Length: 317
Image 1 (cartoon, rainbow, N blue to C red):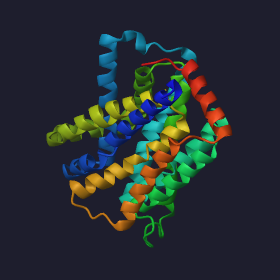
Image 2: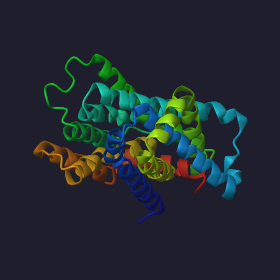
Image 3: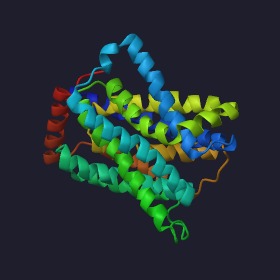
Image 4: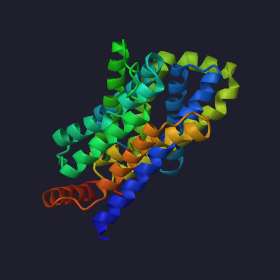
């Protein structure tokens, strides 16, 4: 195995691991709703707690990672505002207006946004292999989310808009992250993206969150899980993978998240899993395999050059 292919394979595995942890969100959040916590409280506590823990950890063991150049503050501010605060609020607003299935399929329009944005801002090629994987992913996610049901989106214009917004802001996490990782290490990028997202959430919902947590202490274990595992753990793994593979590739691979969520719903919550959803799961898995097939000659050269460029410009963990 060549060094470039080995780096790419490791990146793919890290992205899959991070996305798999995100796939556990549904069953945990469902238990938090049953504890009486609102969307705004869950999102605010998750981002704030993760930020505080990571700042404390880095300040203690790796304070050098907290140093950033003043010129990069706008990048981190935009990163957190768009891909942490706005994404979470838009995604949960979509769940409130549409079914979870419809919200999921709209969120996973993200790879399409990333593929285009990466082509325009990062110079990543749109190869035939990547486009094929993208199509398989979008069809697979639509099947997993039951988007084929007639009443899924009927009479829900606002839900459609917030859902597409969640897909765009979710996708921009990869694009902003790729730019930031050219100059900073994984944990530096993560802590400042989280902090920039947590700040506006705290200003809007901080008091409500504090009061709710005090009144509903039974939700604390779930909130800790969200902060430690699905935020610090998942985003850390994803960003580490993003150092090794293209943003558009990582975004496509990360669509294994709804597959994991559907399987956990079936096994843990005893939700039904239709034949069409199984077919969707297979398509998402096939798309990941397609991305690891030998690329066409021109595409391979382009992608190899991109990997080499990434390796030269992004520092290791």
